[in-house]
Length: 259
Image 1 (cartoon, rainbow, N blue to C red):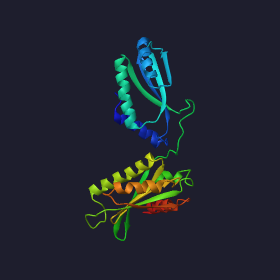
Image 2 (spheres, rainbow, N blue to C red):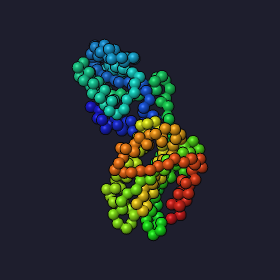
Image 3 (cartoon, rainbow, N blue to C red):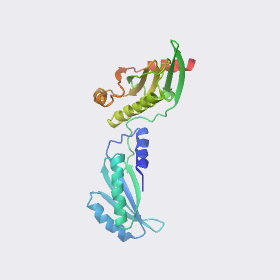
Image 4 (cartoon, helix red, strand yellow):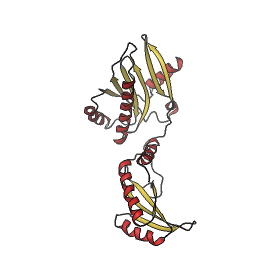
């Protein structure tokens, strides 16, 4: 059986390659049997469930396979639940469910990307600022990003934390909480249809700052404001600035490179 983790990884890969998984896609589900009659009986039941395109063909290996397609929208949870139903149908008609694939709804062209694929290549900088350590992590892969002018808006997040000693750095527990928070922010923006790139972060003197680049600030403010009541454990503030030249990013690249 295809696990939930496998399906979740499938969607994560689509998202990381710039595909908006909130769109409708042409989902195709495949079944295999060495008995064509069993697939024909399954076909009757699939027809009752609004599958718009069903084909039964014979393979070169002397077995039959059925593909059933339907234009619909899924996430990892809903597709996992549908897969459980399809496995049950396969067992009922004594055939094998062979998994799913997705394509563009027109069935011909490639799936459109809503953003650009950019690798993540991080460089760290251990700086000293007013006799305190400042930790910097910057995504150097964006240095050659060809669409900087398009992604010219930057969300600056500021999150205070309690420092357990005189270094100004967070505890291991707070470090993990900060990391989880950043991931949740990115995920929430993505789920809300806002594509972003992780630019850099700094950790210094009880303050974590991190920066995301977006193409259109549009609904970002409403989305972030709606998140605030649900993040009471970590109070955050933010502001959105426009910087077509990515000046802040370039300055930090130089700063990290010279240390």
